[in-house]
Image 1 (tube, rainbow, N blue to C red):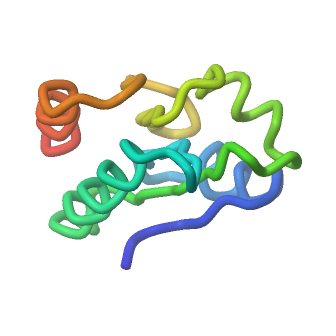
Image 2 (cartoon, rainbow, N blue to C red):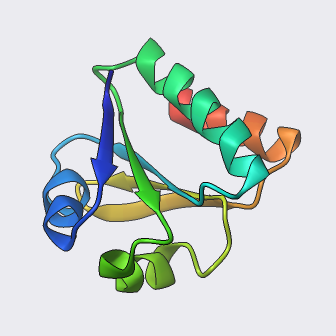
Length: 109
């Protein structure tokens, strides 16, 4: 699977900021019902094109990643961001079928 779990600032730097490949970052919480629906869809989509994207999962309840969560998720879950060469290029806040469809189209290119 092309899925990275980010647990530390070092992981964030390595897997997102310094990654030469585009990365879809999902900010989630285990208690968040929409997150439980969203992450499997993202995993499935990224696995269709493993050479194009990587998926990174960030649990917003991880205190070590507080600054990252505040900067990109703004305390709203689910939040999904696209990064290319360490720069955020797009994002989706919240979840709806319409938003997800539009976001997946961006991933597919």
